Length: 218
Image (cartoon, rainbow, N blue to C red; front, side, top):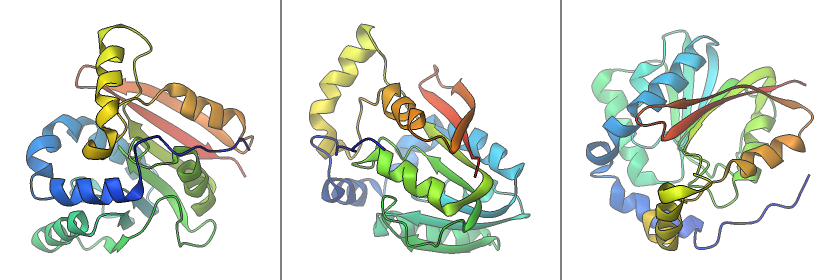
């Protein structure tokens, strides 16, 4: 496995501080834009069912989308975001949500092969070391299980690439990495003979986000 390198300008404290600020207004600013990705990710998960780990659950926007045949555990680094999710679970009586826990996606406290599937919407560009996070997601899913990701994959050239490069200077303040090249996932996959990419497709709005489905083979 190649060495992982933390993203310059993005640390755990940056993420915690940023999402403490975002928590009260997160749904207002991001719910609509990110809804298609959450809907697509949970649709894939609902085809699997069973014990589900929702990584980066945030304010719990996707929690009402999970089918009753799922048992969901959500984790997030931000306690203020989780407090919003807990209120959503109580308000909507989401009986299939087993737990909402403060946890670092790069150091999951669950035993190996604990879940039938893992979903991680908009997480890889938030964590300082995405490769380490991917390793952890594979570790906790059962052999034959799936990892469903939604993330922005950065443009390779053109105006969008220039905009992402400019925004990247503010990664710490934003709490996420605007530049996220496909090579981060592609190179990681090339070193993981036990993981297969079974689907990759862009999503609305404007193909800003990409759905990835990975399967742990053994």
